[in-house]
Length: 466
Ligand code: PEP
Ligand code: CO
Image (cartoon, rainbow, N blue to C red):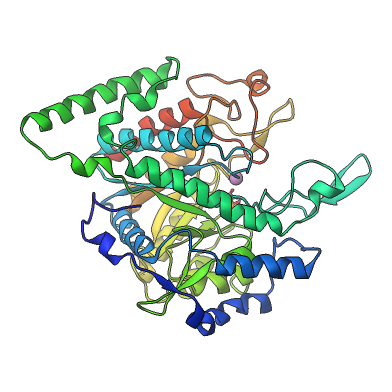
């Protein structure tokens, strides 16, 4: 979050917000309420919702305009091929799992993957968590029925509880306040870890501590040894390592609940522009990217870098119209397309999209999400993914860009820093029986720590061949 590695002048750009005089500017943001909206909970009590909305609007922003502006520059660099974006974290964060240990493990996993990618590909890596705000989920059905009882579907801890009882499933706006406080405590830890020396590259060995040996780990130890050696060499010739102590790390999530996102928007007192202050990068999901819908209207008004998920049914026309709405100025770093096609589809669907967008002159960053197009149900009933499919979609992504001469700008992963068993395969050879051992996710299956490292090594090879 503090910025030293790339541009020493950036902290000077961080600045305060005004709120009281800003109401006029923010009023226009509420226009989304006039548009068709999907995936929003029905809050049972309007007075309760309004009270939480006002409380959130009066609360301090979670991120700052200066940081958001720097991230836009970083994404622009990734879109040009001068950096690589690595985003990772849970499908959905939960309040219960927002503990120091779990958060540290996720940060550590992303730092390790970034070290592998940076060293392997000699490219700066822009590190980003699906963290500190990823508490809401779009769902394919509004209701769930079990044994004749029908209840609202679980929409993430930001909305209701997972337990299958009428009380638990009732949308509760006080959960939006808890989303804010849990995001704040997560960000606080993130800022401490990335600003306090934990993320210092000289700690490469210690990030691996506590994990047993295995393919990914042995390889990581070897790489850490090489980095160590390089660092000692630089030290010996008098290099200044202070810049390594502080690492940039950004927070991102799907901007799904527009009540929450609107309440956390703030006006930049310098420019009068509106920033979504719930996270640095906000994305629009595959289910909410309707051109005439509430989410696109809302996000078009924010200054943040915006992501949009594009699934296998997305057309060139969809992409071009999204660009016109969200990036009319064709501003580098403003728009990231996160494709999630499926391993069997990406080689067919992605080329036309990339070509159409390239020919339009927009400078979008192309990022692959190899998770959401590859979800299956195992024969013993688990929602899972195969490591080989995930990898194959990443390979397809690189092949398409290689063939077109365009830039694969980044990777968007669902992962955890713990040893869960939710995704099949990988060097740990998790099989269907293995899924029963430690399957913890409430929504989508995540790569575990070892699978994440393994994937990073494979992607580093592809990047270095680029
Ligand atoms: C997600 O990222 O968790 C998600 C729901 O993805 P998508 O919108 O691509 O389906
Ligand atoms: Co998911």
